[in-house]
Length: 314
Image (cartoon, rainbow, N blue to C red; front, side):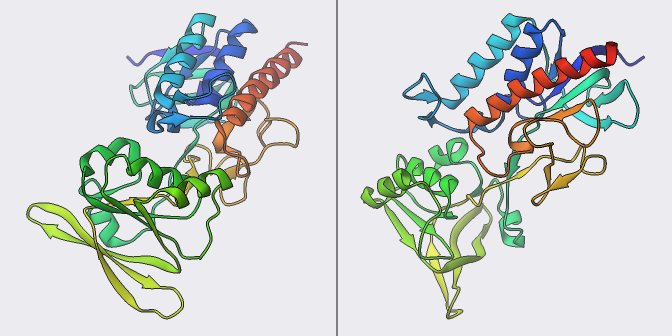
């Protein structure tokens, strides 16, 4: 028979928002359960140097998440390695179903499922995923020592990936559909100074080219967005860095969404459209998307949940 676990507060997700919510909910004696999800630690586990976390001039992303998890555990948060596959917010207590078969019932829920990498949706991109096409430089950059690679995108993610990949690649071509980047100026300055990076403006990825036996990437076809001219660039790896989409699969039918699929919360709070359900971090943040703001929202969600639960007992 499947296990059932009950908690006052169920936290779904384990990035900075989830772990911070776990710390604050534990301090409030709510005895929270935190279910880590498919990627324990969230996006920061696939980041190398983090230079904007207050108190650490530089810290490795995975190390920071290990510390946060340990902090939440030390406060008394019950951290479970499981993936929530279904969430019923139609009646209280809320019910979540884990991939393990465990049912979690909760008086309140904090959603901190974060965001995931976006893809372009090209058939050739899909065909070579894991065989030269990646969305994670820190996961796969090591495999391209001394080789030429391309990065697609123009925001912070793309520039950070391109800079990181120069640790391995002989040349990085950054392909962007405009002639200026959206990345922070400090990152743009670093990019300009790096002799290994060559930007290719006004181009978009048309096709990933490669071989089937052995399966691997040999180049990309790119299109000039103004003239339509197609150019083929030889490369061994393609890193798609066009941003992230909120992981709302569990709640897209039950919670109010806005701004392209982010969970809507009431201004100045983490309350969603369902009383007792709270959202924090990249799942709801279409504007800032920083580790520190995610952690701040995790704190807010725990405090909001604590107050809401107290009101129910009155």
